[in-house]
Length: 513
Image (cartoon, rainbow, N blue to C red; front, side, top):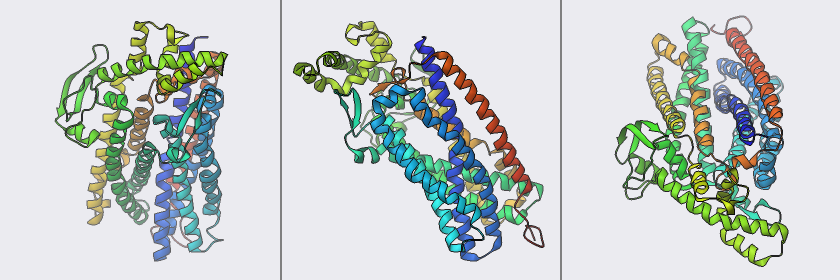
């Protein structure tokens, strides 16, 4: 079995299914809150146009929600098929937030979404409003628990290695739930979802205004989307700064790759706006830097260094060497679990055991690794710098563009001139795919920037895969691509259909009457 091919195909399959699923997640988050806001205005004012807005955007939310459910379930199954050793090694911790998400958040969201669609004539206004807010809360809680699980992969706290079971076990549920990485990821991801929902509503409203259809409906929808989107876009930038600070504390190599910082600079470090990372020569050519900016963002100080890749690789070599005795002690304990000396050695070096496991890619017994193999494993902790570098900058550039778009739209809305500025409407319409691109790039930076770890510093990715035939993974990958392509066609067809139909006309007149 070709291990490298198996790992690559397994990673590709999970990446495709995860990134496809995340096409629906941010829109679900954003639309759910926008629906709750629109219906709140309807309950307070009693004006039917706000009810029509809630029902129309609710239909598009329902289509998106159904697709998100269909694509999300398959992801969790992969932990037991393609990533069985991952599930065995860390399932006691990783499975807890996923189980809570399914039992609490998803149950809440799925239960009330039916009432949202079929309760308009059966519930009072206030009762239906409560249902809508519960759908929004359930959507956000669902994201919270999933992001807690993902954050543990980035910063594995609240757990310890049990040499008796040869697995990671939960030691503090409080630390897992209050993981600082989880807090940052949740607020940042949710805010990005709100931006996605706002752009979606604004773009479709702009299309109606350009066509001269449902004008009053579209103007109100656009105004809500712009106000909500501006606040959300500003939040993404502020919360992104907090994420940068957290990365500095927990994932220094990822930050160095984002900045293409090969060597540690004197504090405070400069921020590279533009550059051409060169993986072959370990340098960044044509770099355009802003003095002090990275130091202030990453460390919030003027006297703290941001370590470079060379220094982090040297540190990784030290941790690999320190983890080799732990690996050797484990081999002894497998034969004789009562060996006190081996257990003492393991306890002294267990924090670096994961780094020693990196050597398993090159040699069966880490204790027999050569200096060249240790060096190779240490440099293997460096992700693909050019891809991470540019993905991050495109994402940030799009975030700044959204702020400008919504700020100008807010100015137009305040002067009641949205419908008159056709150039702005055209830009808003063509902006439609951009928040998804930004969100996918953000996840690419977060996940690919963590490589070669499936669990940061604990479990290398190549050890986490299931020992299944490459042909099986290739076949299932092809099946997923085919199935998801069909779903994408159905999704686009349904969204186009209901957008073209527009909001339902009230009895005796058109929606614009």
